[in-house]
Length: 182
Image 1: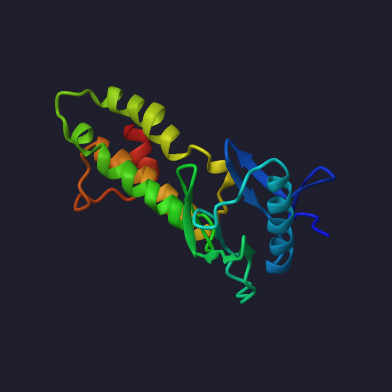
Image 2: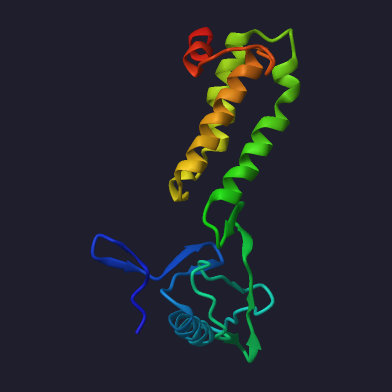
């Protein structure tokens, strides 16, 4: 039987739902196959069908099972990454999503950072209210390691340096000095 891979309190979580999207959670490919089969059966009881074309499966990278999972006789495509509700989900965890958001955060606001007619105090408020809140949206689901945390801190410092027009050639030794100027 399927008991889910995540528990909240003592309650196992086997799926996450939003509108017509369902993310199934399983310990391995065999449990996932069982979960998909049960979902397909329950759906058909209500006159609904799972679209094999739209349905993807992904393992966490540790399991490279060759188990074929089928819906309506069609093999579901196994992928290494996909976009779900605006977030990139990969078998590597959160790193690709974080790097993608960093790139978007730093490039889209270049015209504002470079605009000499906007006060630094206004740019700082924009950084905190818009940039960081958008960058950190849904971050509670991220899996972080030391390398990713370092990259996030570096992105934040990079934003502060751009706000203050501190060139990489200008020798500012510490992040504390940058924060002091802010």
